[in-house]
Length: 334
Ligand code: UT7
Image (cartoon, rainbow, N blue to C red; front, side):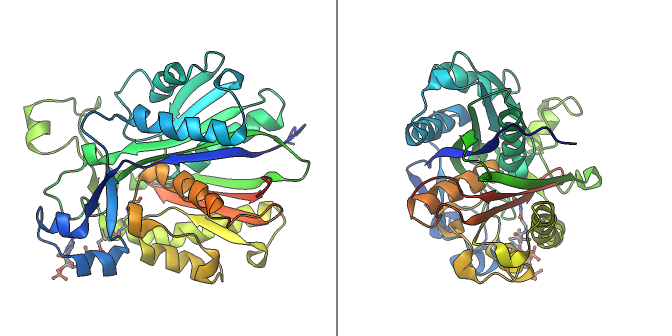
């Protein structure tokens, strides 16, 4: 049984990407790769990289301020802040607490959520529960990453893909029948080693060996991730659709995690969606993990691609392994 007093949806969106652009030509100077290979195999042409003095909460702050402004909600009105990230300012306190202070959101509970690239959708599902049950009125969900600080810039398998950025959404009560209709969250910890930062935690605390072996950096089995992703991206959306009593044909627009253009195309094919109904910005921003979906969502909205009443699907996958999708009936006016 579910207790649903309100419909929960997005009231405002905002995003921020750092000014510095790193092109494929720039990466050619760092590792043995080339623009043609990166473009063909990933769809990425360039990505944004934060300044050395910028931490994840700095990116999150700008995205959050923009989302609050868009929602016409003040920081004091927020009941809860969730920051989805795998590149927190530090292990503790949470980046959400740092953000709460920077925003002046003194009435908000705050915590981080670690579900990698699925983190924004996981966090949105939590926000939805609090709003639907009437416990909270306004929840800020932010996906923010500074992955450039967790990349081994000698590893061509990862440094061509990962990037920095932040996207934010303010959740609140929306018109009945609009907003979040359903979601699907999943995990398979047997794939924990597929994408990981193996050092710096309690399993292998920081020491000389961990530094020498780049254990504080992202390690990824690209092929394994690819195989998992092409299945997960489509099948999670199908589960969410079923829960909402909808079918593939009902989707007006898909906002997928921007990991690899070939993964996005295969998900679109599985969902019988032409690419015109799929938002893609990977060529500009690369893969900013938890920030990828909210940046794409905010950009799609700014470009007038999301119309009130349309069925919007979000779909992500990532380290854990995790996957997550959500179906919304778009509640915001253009
Ligand atoms: O947010 C979730 C996180 N991650 C992902 O979604 C990543 C999913 N995986 C991928 O996107 C792809 O697996 C990669 C882009 C990482 C790699 O592409 P791939 O098509 O799986 O390449 P591969 O590892 O099978 O390598 C194919 C060839 C190899 O050469 P040979 O053995 O065929 O001669 C590699 O050595 O390409 C070579 N290669 C490269 N060449 C130029 C591998 N990486 C590069 C590179 N530049 N960066």
